[in-house]
Structures are given as structure tokens and as C-alpha cells.
Length: 285
Image 1 (cartoon, rainbow, N blue to C red):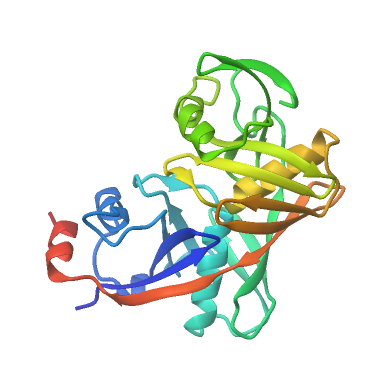
Image 2 (image 1 turned 180 degrees about the vertical axis):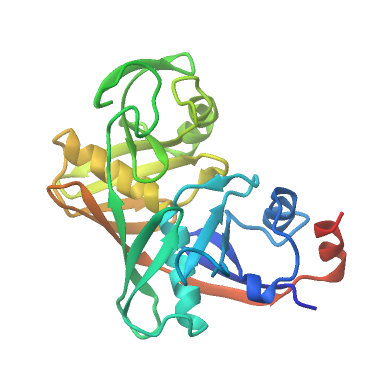
């Protein structure tokens, strides 16, 4: 039965790779929710889908949140997909490219097992129209807003998906779970937003907790690391490179003067196999 899966984790952010060449069923939002369900499915924080046949790039991918919605970009998802490409022989050079959306990102493999990879994530923007954030055109930096019944100072940023960074001394899973859902869906963010609660440890170190758009509380996130580090540099609290410490581990973020970002972190293989017939039946229902 052509219903194969490959599962990896990047700093505790676990994802399933579905390769169209090895999966004969439509990847609908309902199918994604079945796969990602931690009680009735395989369980995952998202699905990496590719390489896509006939795509604009030979290693084109799409990334889906566990609720079935599509994400513009995922740093951990890109690293996981890059590791899958390396493991399966789709990529054999130590530097190669992946297509996602309308972008092409460069991957650097740091060791023979491809356990550590660096992704050129693109350019950060703090402009409200790019993110997007409601209201007049502006850079959303240290902006005073009221969200979820509380007053915050936020820095909003995009690196292909929207982020809201809140610097605070209260950085905990409980705080992220308590405020994250309401902030994610606030009218200030027309396309919803990822949320990071961040604490500056020193000029080159951040601690963050994450509420991820379409996924909920998450142990780690590559784009969240990039967004939080970028916000810390933009507001003068950190200098590049920045180590971003998360519940699942640490990632390294480098930011140049044009706000281009490189993200380095680890990936581990978990399992591969074939979905059982009873779950496949749900894909077709």
C-alpha cells in the first residue's frame, strides 16, 4: 500500500514528511488533521509535503499546520524536509535549494548525517502591510496595544509568516497557553499570528515560549526563533548572532544589516512506516 510516512523532530517540534511519490491519497485538510492527531493518528506538529511533482522548483514543498491550514514558512519544517531530502538521496550536495511558496531557500548541511543544518530564511520585515497588521502603514516596533484584555508592547515581524513578539520577564508555558490563543486571533492580525513571549538573557541570548498559529503551544519553532531574535536586534536589546533558547532546545540565528536571516539547528529521525488500513480509510472518507 502506497501510504508511507517519515517522521522527524527538530528541537521537539515533531513533523511528518509525506512524499507524493510514496503516498497515493489526496492530502486534504481532513487527512492532515487525522495524521497529526496525537490520540487517533500518528501525532505531529505539522506535515511537510514534497517534493511536489511539476512544481516551480525540483525540490518544492508545502508545509501544513496540524489544523490543516497551510503555513507560509516553517524554519523547523524546512530543516526537517531538508534532512528527508538528504536521507532519501534527493539532495547529495552539501549546499542545495528548496522551494516553498514563491521563495527558494538555501540549505547548508553541516555534517555527514545531516543532523545539523543551516537555512537561509530570507529577510525580516517589520512593516505592517507585509506582516500584515491592521491600521495605518508603519513599522510595528515597541507598539503599545491592548490584546486579550491586557496592555502589551509588541514588535510585529514577518519572515514569510506573521509574528507578534512580546518582551517580558514572565516567560513560561503557562503564560503562552493563557494569552496565546486570544492574541493569535485578535483583529489586529488579519491572518492571525504566531506569538512569542521573550526574555533577554544577555546581548546574544534570548529565552522564548511560543504559541504557534494553527498549532498551539509548541516546544520550538524556527521562524519564531528568527522573529524573536530579529525583534531583539531591532529594539537594540541583542546583537547578532543570537542563541534562542526554547523548551525543546536552542537554535542559532544570524542577522545581517539587510535583515537577512540564517537559522541553524538540529534534526533527528524518529520513524518511518506505512499508515495502517483503518487510518487510510479515514483519508478517503
